[in-house]
Image 1 (cartoon, rainbow over the protein chains, first blue to last red):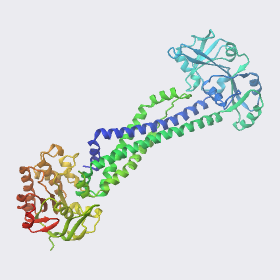
Image 2 (cartoon, rainbow over the protein chains, first blue to last red; image 1 turned 90 degrees about the vertical axis):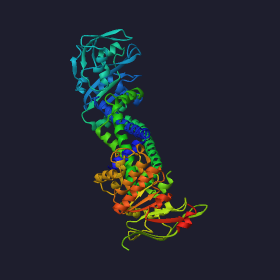
Image 3 (cartoon, rainbow over the protein chains, first blue to last red; image 1 turned 120 degrees about the vertical axis):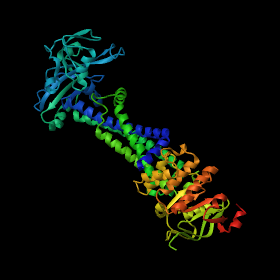
Image 4 (cartoon, chains in turn purple, brown; image 1 turned 180 degrees about the horizontal axis):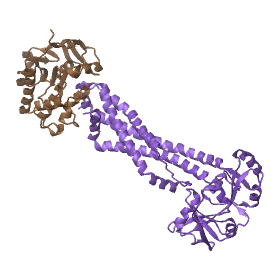
Length: 394
Length: 231
């Protein structure tokens, strides 16, 4: 016989009550792990997405910086255009190491998403695009045959979705335009996987935007010159300069606000679980007043009783912690699925990133929660005087 | 004088309630020697259980002096009293008070856990066999009859080899046959093993078999004739 077996058998006495309490702890831990996992995963995915854009600076038509950020990350709606002349000017700047012009356009395809319809993203690019994104390699096929060819290179996911291979044709809805697929990019884990790329000139012609661009991606030779570079472009009419650091900062600031809220939710869940545990153990202590008196009569010290009750609380939280970790792992895909539906913008990549460290911390947190929750009930139980507990426990 | 295990001098126990003051035990003088079999008798409310609790260090006195094994315990706190109970005293209660989640064997082993004597399983088994429950060791209390439960309680009280066994109405909740069995075991423990036993009982027949009778009336020790008027 061990202390642990005594404590465990006490918990097993009221199975439903113990299981419900363990369930409460498990849910709190699962919520905590999922939220912290989401926090870490979202930042990681977003950082990965932004870093994989390949450029440090984006020049866009003047407008809301958040809209510009959206534009960069997913092509966004309500696009603004600038004259290509600005590209010709910037490309000569000696501070620029690499530069690529882009024209983003969208078309609504009513056949998408099982007939619900969806937006198809097109991007006009030139060969400089590959220089800025060396990871954009071909799974099959290759580059366009000419600057104005009616050809397309498909991102990995959109090619999978539309079941296209080089040599196949794709149809641009509303424009009645047919393009020939010449290449398919390997998966990059970014929004580019969902984009159909066209030669820049072809895109300008097909979408009726000759001489127009939506963005210019730029990599500077020295990022320290960004301030001066931005200053110099400040006076150019109709454009704005956005650094990726700015975008990251802006989005992370938004996330930080949301994080405060999610942390509050997690904290509430934990507090409710702790109260539940205290309530359960306290009820159990009151029900066992007589037994505790007997234990004291037959030799249990205050510390012994404290230990048994404390162990019961810790056991509940320990089992709840393990169950919560397992629930969080098992529910990762479901949480990610819901988040992608709910969030206005979700970067590609794993949104809920649960690490062993996070699981370990939450597990230890659950045990600490048990130790804290157990103090009061254990104190109450250990403070009982044997004769009073035995005689008044009926 | 060395064989005096308990010496109570003019001890009293007073309960101060909001509406009244109850003197449960009044000015009791009592000596209990090693090997004695003492039955405390008296009508309901006479203070038998309170006196037993005090002698067993489960409760504290309000006044007087109580010596246990030569040590004055009158003013000791619960944290010190538990050390005196552990190993020196065993308890048997009227309603058995076994731990319902533990088997008969585990119930008997429990005091060993508290006494930090983890290797006493064999002794616990031996005691259960001694009280005739070798075949019921794995049963939970709810699977045992009243008599069997009380026999488990006796084994539990003996497992730490106490010097004194206190039994509060040990046959009070048992039928005659089971009561006789339990009393027979207690008597055997006293006569064969020399264990000091102090019990309370309403049962005149059982009380008359004890080595010494102590009669209580209104918390005071009185001659038998006076107590029997209220029995």
